[in-house]
Image 1 (cartoon, helix red, strand yellow):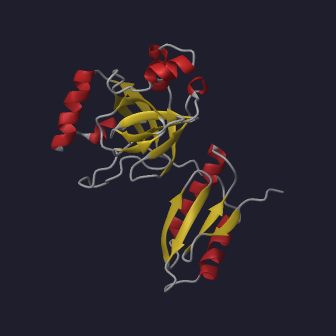
Image 2 (tube, rainbow, N blue to C red):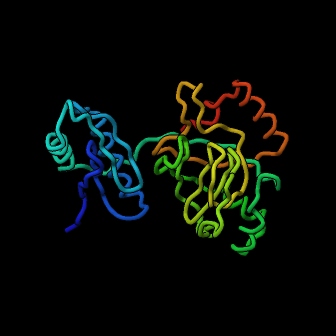
Length: 242
């Protein structure tokens, strides 16, 4: 019999519902199923639910409900809960792999026994699943990286990674939405803003979305960046119609 799901305390106004170990689409599908069920039933006192790779954080208002009452509601939902592969959006995101942006491309190619061109071909050939957002607003942890590009994180993280940097580490790929420290391998850069408070939906990607990368030239990158900075870039055009 599985030891999961498990409910663990998380501070004095929350608890975590854990469905397993590791990064796995099946485990994440159970996380998203409970996330959807709580969104649909919206019990009194629920503040928010935050999905991660393998668990759902449930936060509540103790002036409206009690831990016991909300946990009882959650346990009722868990009874018979079925995995849910969230019907997310598919995005085609532009990336420029030019040398000035691809700070680790040569090293990645060497360590993976590939040419830089092969690294780009493999990276743009993938379809990546957004498991969760974290670390900073808008940063998506995307799984599905081809095993040929699996590498541990850099032994010496950078103190500053440029905004928009597209990176890989282990079995994941991501895009840095802000300039920040980071230890992933940088393969290129996107002109897009993954977080923009001026947009109706400030965070571009959501858990359950899928992403493919499209290689663009430095000229195309510069043109799109000008549109992004002017607030005229059409982000809706990046969504792929099924």
